[in-house]
Every structure is written in structure tokens, then in C-alpha cells.
Image (cartoon, helix red, strand yellow):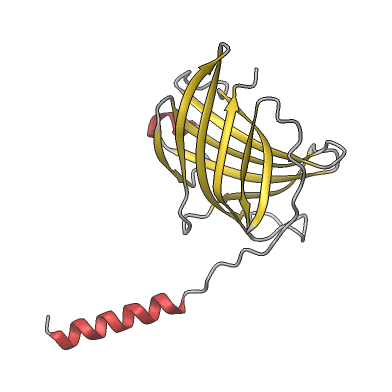
Length: 193
């Protein structure tokens, strides 16, 4: 390839990259953290401070070697409003790439970590809007510590997650943005019985 061809290809590639539309992350609803009996999480949700309750769980039907973490928010009267689930972790420290994969049966075999985000309405028992991982973002979770304190396993970590509305159905709440990101996330959770 001659120099002129290389320059032309570089120029065309840079035009393509610059023409891609940036993802917008408008502010959406922020709810209460709720009871933090089994743990907590903090992060920024589309640029706003976000705090939630949290817990670790061993998904039923899966190997005891796999666990998930959940983060939840509530209304001021205690109705569930948001849930973030990140699952497929092994009991080891380290960074995990989080991928879009809503087939939880393949998590155990593929050793992949996946995540989902959903909002709820009414008394917290009606699924409102559902989001999946947006693979255009930098999605990861890190397990920084696994300790036993007073006989309970305590798991600490960090995360950075980007979600996009799963438009397989119509959005139920117009106040929910199409894209949601949680950045600079940290958590400490214990297992929910």
C-alpha cells in the first residue's frame, strides 16, 4: 500500500468515528437507598449521586461456586423502585468484564459476568422498564475483597456499568432515560439468607 492510500484510509476512518452519535445520559429519577441490612453500594447514576442497599446471593439451581450481587432502591414509603443484578462471579479477587448475556444458564459454563437493570412501579411488584448491558460502554466489576467477619462472608468491590433500554416492548415510564450508566461504583455486601 502506498502512502496516499494509507492517508486516505486513515482520513475515512476518522470521519466515520467522528460521525458516530455520542450516547446521551440525561438525568433520571433518584430514589432512596432503603434498608442496608445486608450491604450497600454508591456510585454516580448519569452524573448524579446514587446510593442503594445491596446483598450477595447464590442463584438457585447454580453451582455453589457462583454468586451474584444485587443493588436496590426504594421510595420513601418503602416500595422497590430499581434493581441492578450483576452475576456470574467466582469466589476470587479480580476484575471481570461484564457482557450482555441474559441467558443465565450459560453463565456457569462460560464463566461470564453479566448484568441487568430494571425499574418497578406501584408497590414495587410491577416490572416497569428493563435494560440490558450496552456493550459500547466500558463495563466491568472488580471483586476487591472476600472476608469472613463474625462468621459471615463479606464481599467488597467496584463497578462501572452502562445500560440501554431493552425496546422489545414499549417504555412504561417516560421519566426513565434510554441510557443509564453507573460509574465509580463501590459496594460491600453480605449474603442474603
